[in-house]
Image 1 (cartoon, rainbow, N blue to C red):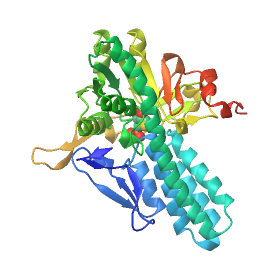
Image 2 (image 1 turned 180 degrees about the vertical axis):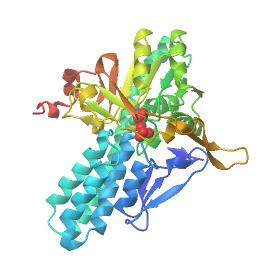
Image 3 (image 1 turned 180 degrees about the horizontal axis):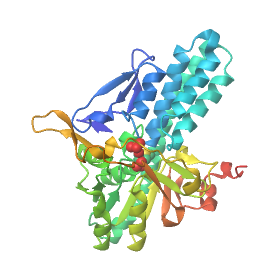
Image 4 (image 1 turned 30 degrees about the vertical axis):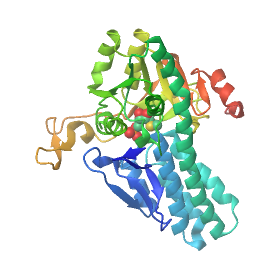
Length: 372
Ligand code: MRU
């Protein structure tokens, strides 16, 4: 998408030196636009763990480039153990996002198939670029499929703005480009369909307030930032036409793990007859998992994300302040699971499907083989 009119992706290899991978450091948005250079797999692990990059699709693409950097820096005599250690370190950075292990395992298999050191390194770089391109293309297609749903609602409203609520940031910053939940919104907006987005601020990390609001402003999409607890009230008063969120991991039966608070939005949507859609590239499916509640690991993060808040002071300095009494006990789950029964539909690069195993397999028949 665009930053001040210039097209950007969230991750790309340096033009002049493929040993340097560049990312937008999202910790500083919306106040500063900072590009960080990553040169080692350790730097990539830090960038993922400490959320310089975040969002399932981008975490996967970054891990793929991490494997490329690992292959480049691995000593010839110790190549395989070095690569396997790098893979282990990368997978442990964030436990919930399904794309992380998916990208790392794809790299491991591809590297192993090559015979020479040079070929292994070339393959790891080519595959990292392929995974990034594929992520962007899949999100573009999600936009095309999801746009049709928005267009239908727009026709029903005789062209009045379609009010879409979203949670967290499943925008282009969470992927390589376009986003999952935002792709249909961008596609509809580009076609002249009137949309308006309710942006949940998304405590505690504030992905909505910091990232989604910044993205939508950059693309000129009308939007309003709301406190997390506002969505239910808006739905009760007919002010939300649909919800679209992303997912960090999706089971083969259609349960989704997404940013903490998503489940409550789904409950409120069901109670108010508001359609609740989840947008995802298929890299987010974990085909080995059936039951999201018992089988998806839920990341717990530092309580400091709850007790402190970061922002811009009146003198334009990036500042962290405490908002709770010192030593207040905290519990900070990063994600929750929304069961398939609360979901109106899943929007992927192959189309729209019901959140149930049969309909998912209609679009992904190659995964019909049940996990052991
Ligand atoms: O902790 P984050 O910012 O990495 O979590 C991201 C999310 O949960 C988003 O909601 C998004 O939907 C998933 S990104 C594909």
